Amino acid sequence: AQKVTQAQTEISVVEKEDVTLDCVYETRDTTYYLFWYKQPPSGELVFLIRRNSFDEQNEISGRYSWNFQKSTSSFNFTITASQVVDSAVYFCALSENSGYSTLTFGKGTMLLVSP
Amino acid sequence: DTGVSQDPRHKITKRGQNVTFRCDPISEHNRLYWYRQTLGQGPEFLTYFQNEAQLEKSRLLSDRFSAERPKGSFSTLEIQRTEQGDSAMYLCASTTGYGETQYFGPGTRLLVL
Image 1 (cartoon, each protein chain N blue to C red):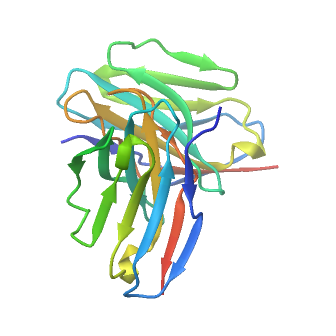
Image 2: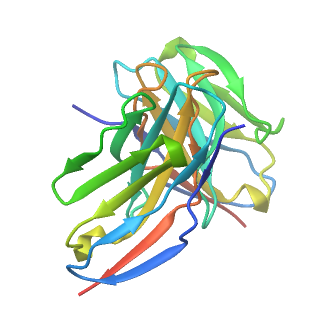
Image 3: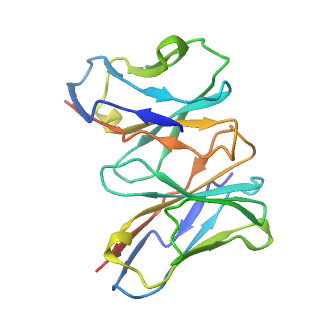
């Protein structure tokens, strides 16, 4: 069965600090997809990134970057020069190629960025 | 280009009452998912539709829950005889294919008193 672990429940940083959110996953499929979503206090899940299991290239989008390592089953998310607006709960999620691609989420990491 | 919409955004009801939520997916998306999120947890899968067919249901979906997607457009999720344990955020997502990005609506927050 698929599983996603986000071991960090809450992280507090001061603005302009870099922060890394960890995500470890388990799956028996060789083809799968990994996602990160942001959930601000309003509650809506905002899509950040999708990565398939065959693409291990790291990705950078502005202040955001993602490090995908199949050898350690990890898909970590780094925010560079954090800002107060980054404060939210961040979820890592996994969908397998088998079945109906339902998403399995981790429990989320709450990021608090203070001025 | 409108995203996924859900109605109502908030619902307060008394234990034992029935409630119904609506989800309107992105217009060209034929796949629709319902999830439930309780406080401090990630969303958990409830049920999946491809067009009008309900193809998968989670064991979380007790027989008090029913979902429909008539004509493969909007979907409704009904909870009968609500219990306090049903209090949660109910999220709807839609997508175009397996493994593709699921786009979420704003959710319906249910509080059962």
